[in-house]
Image 1: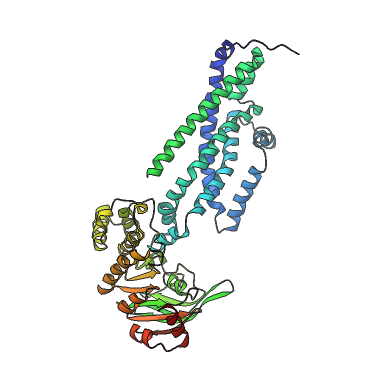
Image 2: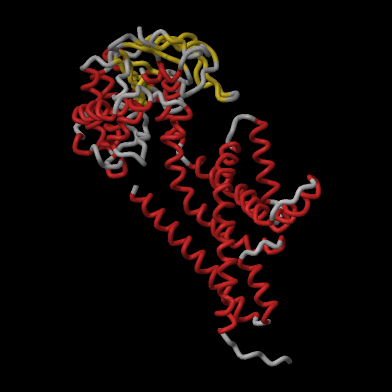
Length: 222
Length: 241
């Protein structure tokens, strides 16, 4: 049996600039991916509750396809399969953001749909009986209450998406996990490097959790 | 007349809940609708502002036929206030904001204008000191009084009450009925679905007894309560009085 190496944290410290560069990209991909994903999710979630069968069908199909396939396959598809079909290259960063957006959008759609549907029908009736239009009732009455209920599950999805970016190493984008692989390839110090990588992920997710919790608290006070 | 109902039918799927209802409500009239649960009272009331779709027949409110696709329903609804059994206050808005939302968004009133009127209405229902609290800090009776004030903020021509005291603890019923009595005295046209026979007897100009989706009998409270014409009315009254 191979003898374990002594742990030497200087390897991790030396790798920090490289890893932080990756962390920056991880944050960028997550941030833009989730902003777009949120927009997709809201539109799709509302479309799922639509009376129009075509709109509802498209939205449902999207959610089922994305939820039914792994994000890694989706990323490979966006980065390799679609360019082959269209004959254009997609930069790996753009493909990464697209993968997070499209993937999170499907889950966020379900969060949006569930929250909106959970608002008591009496709220809509009260709004409509006062003469508010359908859109006004939604905007002023239903959405603010639904949004409050969305925050915990949205926070969950944000953290999942952030961690999902690690799978984007397969399309070569230099996010945190990819940089970790490079560092380990250089110095073979797997224990130190992967510990450092894990700590950085944890620091990012805990910061995100902190922000979300504050937001939730503020909205609960109203 | 302010409300005219002609040959109204309403079905949920194959279940017919309203059968050929004809009725008119005159201005300044207070009509109470009574009857066993499942008789269609609430559905009837909800057809008067089209919260329930009408299967057949016509409901004409203030000259507007609700079943006519040309009718601006949102506008008609501003003239028909509704008070719900479960209050349905907006929990994310203060009492004041509950009252000013529709006047500001629908009538385009300024915040000051809507706020001033809201304060007057809150004073009327005895809750001016609650203007800035959220609904979850109110008792059931207070919530319902706010809900009445909220409906009044649109200056409706008629008020519909859907079992307004049924969700209240017994000791809170009185304060809501008192507000409704004041309203009736001021000449508000009211249609009230209720189980409060005392209120119906005292305040109503007309009591309508419904059973199995039909208007079985309508009369002055004195006549209907003391001398019902139909056996079914008599049986119902015997059970509850």
